[in-house]
Image (cartoon, rainbow, N blue to C red):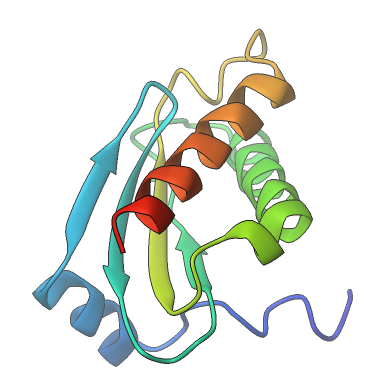
Length: 117
């Protein structure tokens, strides 16, 4: 496991409570993002896939890996000072869903919230 992999992730309950207290929501076909802009200057995120969405842990983990890889790949283009909570939908976890489609949706989300700042 890479030591710097989890540096910019939400961990504490207080961080999640702060996110839920004053947030905005972005919805698309593959996921919902609950986000908040802050003056921290760094992008922090978390991924939550409930068991209700997908019973098999292997599929939930694959969904998390996909989102992590995309965020790692485009983190320089993301909005600085944003806190994000990704909640994937069942359609994202479908084996027929292409990685490029998910990547395109996350790019579109980053472009939208960067524009609105």
